[in-house]
Image (cartoon, rainbow, N blue to C red):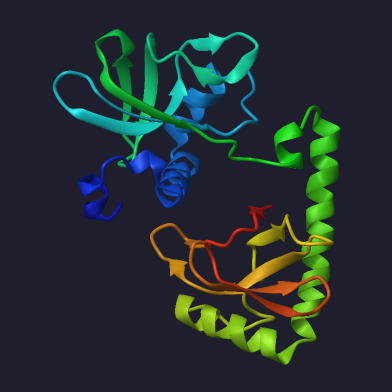
Length: 229
């Protein structure tokens, strides 16, 4: 599923692209989601503890989806000295005996970030979902009114073998430029598409149709923070 040269690197868990990729595996693996929902005290969160280690017979790397909480007050971290459940890049679910594990490395990342990480009740969540739907509907109108934006999007739809807009699907990747003055929202309409993940590679240059109707280029790997909503 991943490039073979991932295993030639010192540790994949330090690569943001790899972390995004294995979370895609998590979201597409029903068994992994079931484990997470049954073990995590707050299933609305996303796994954020990426671990590489050896169990004495082989090297293991993946994202932790269950086990024993390291701290009852921190529902994000699992105790790596106890038995923990790991999801690998090949969608394999493993029970790792932490007391046998050696060469342990971990990266803990706030995957959701921003407002989405602070969801505390169902109504707030619904309100935010509705807000995003309204934003996407407005951006659909912007797309329809911009021949240049439609041209970029139609090129992507043709690459996917889909019908052109408006018969074809609307862009779904909504991003926010967090560190710009008056943080803008926009839909990604062009860039590097990773077929096996069904998603854009935002570490590479991409184009965004913003809420003010402008087509904005982002070079990727920039200082400003880009959040996917």
